[in-house]
Image (cartoon, rainbow, N blue to C red):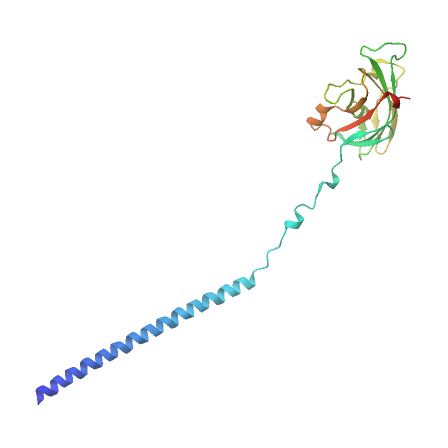
Length: 217
């Protein structure tokens, strides 16, 4: 009888231990699930808070540049007699107007070394806030019969009848004078900014006045 009771007691104890372990495992699993669920919920909450706390991204694609090229002076590639161009040099900015031209075979009873003389009447206005040498402005120009060919520099200093461009031009001051060139025979003549100065960015604009003998005064 005692042996049976002992066996029964051992069996009961084993069942109790098994149930206890089962309950303990289930409790640990539930605690782990609760812990994991709480952590995930905390992460979700933290993500939402962080997202809500950040400012929205601004789209700058529409304002790529508030400083557009509005202030950049344009080239004047097909100007005629009476038209003006504004050029910007390393010294300053000026407006130049070709008011008239004379194409002639001689000048002061002298024959040209080339085919003809081109006498240009020009006005120059200083648009800078400081004075600048007027001679530096007019010396930027040359004459050519062909855009693809070389040009010829101004030669008025060789003739006393033409007043030389000397002195400083004050802000907003305008000077009038003449420029004398020699050129070769061609259906058209072109007074332009020396291309070498444009390439070197000593003058920022490419400017050309195109005219024919019919435009000659």
